[in-house]
Image (tube, rainbow, N blue to C red; front, side, top):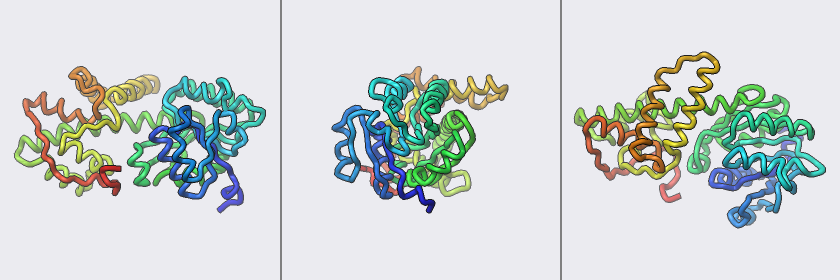
Length: 315
């Protein structure tokens, strides 16, 4: 362990469902964490676990490293350079680690403003949801100054099973978009072969058990299996959000001159699901649309299917 690994203080802005779960992991790892959340009451249970709560982002400016996880570009601007923002105080953190869902343009703007204050910014988008966080299987892509990454790596490692430094600037944002495009392509393909297998005479449960035990199985296919078998489409990620990422990915593909015909067709299938009204449910409803196009009416198999995360279903 490096000398500064024991002494770096941590701030965290944004204790929504994802942020809350990640803060818990830092606390469990023994780190000193101070937290700002717009709705203070939602963060108060963290105080019982050892977190310190503050009333403004500016009160975190004396922390060595500040994580930010907010919902949109406007939110990122507000908590950094808005009234009582993190970068408006007389002091500034050494490093900001931003895991928010924001545009590369806004992130680059905040990166420049942070640099003017002597603060390095790392973009660190994540792959997972709160249940994945609690299972310890979250992954992160990180970009920005290599020296800043190496200084903060010991704070990133407790957050999940994989942290990958992918390069300078905003490249981690593109890496996450590539990830989500692949997510959509796999989800559409999984819907197609699952309907095909069922039409051929096997149950969805049996087919997916076989698939998950094969070389083609993955954390994702196993995690989505309960939804596909039991038609439980409680949202973890919606078709609306998935279409947004497809749009961003295909725009980047045009920018870099990379043909992506499979992604483009999968994006059309996602748009079709949205047109059919699947806007607030989980994107696993791609299965329902595939069944509809195949003239099949699916019913829940009411089976006990392991999602592979090792977390009880009611947590």
